[in-house]
Length: 217
Length: 241
Image (cartoon, rainbow over all chains, first blue to last red; front, side, top):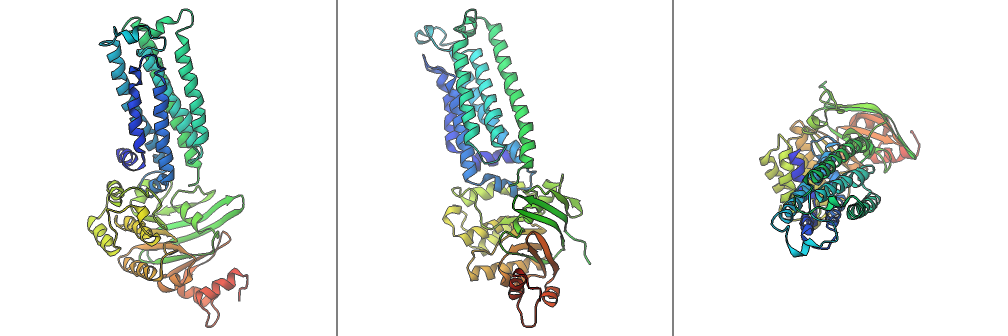
């Protein structure tokens, strides 16, 4: 599987995808809906799917001594790898905001979502939705990108909306705690996000393996 | 008679406007099989089914005595497959494509790769998009030949090649045959079959109309003085004799 990941990174991926990992740093922008960064990562990955489709990536993969369904696993692995890079970057930025920058003036009166563990939970939910809605949708046909991506855009913006609204509701303000305050709640939200990510990805992989096996290339 | 390297039994595939019906044949070592039929007769569907790219509705496909289903990885190590010209990664350097491809094959032979690369005059620093159609066919063949494939399955490898390149390619087929490689190539150019095929598979409207040696085909289907091309044209028009 590592050979296929290498193939994805060296041949199939669009350079734009790597560039879009930098959107993990949006967590540093004050007064900005920082969750949008994970939507942009989805946009970057979408570019790779488009590039791969135009470069007949699936035809090439079919020539290799791999099972047809390995092409599916390789795409999920590639997305997971890029998402991991993004998550590591945005986690590092979040930790900086939670520690060294927790008293910075620009973040104290932030009306938008703070970069904390709840934010990271929402990031994982958004990344999981990409795997489920976009990648899963793509493997229903093996060529159609527009509809799955449109669905992802809608759900991704709803997630941003939910993240930005939730802590404004009565009794929910603790979700936007700065630094390490209400850390128990923050950890619970992060755990929930992580569970959503792995559950959405696992279900999507299984569904894609089944549907791609039925597709005639 | 030697054991077949590949066996296709009662292959079926239905599309809304086309049906592949009960296609059965086998490929033997050191034989060149020409797979002929007009456009849309079912050649590509048969070949894609043989590679697991198309899901057949029925039938069995096996290589080296092992069913393809469930053994794809192992079998594809010993197969070479090419669909005409390289149409993938047009903007990646050939060197890069080869570097990624090489580790997938256990039996990749760097000497063969260099030998065929020189023979085909392929410049590794070029992009596939910079190559002519004929050169992209050769690039696909180069990748297929570099891992010592025992069976080569080639979908219309000679279409769109100039007569010189076609002749060169057919000579390579003959050389590979002498090394024990079994080749199945689909074509609608009957002169290619006349030049190098040992066996002929003739498919018509999704059914295998002939599966025999070239000599038997000539005996059975060609009228006196008639070439294979003339016989096939007549058969396509529905005149058996």
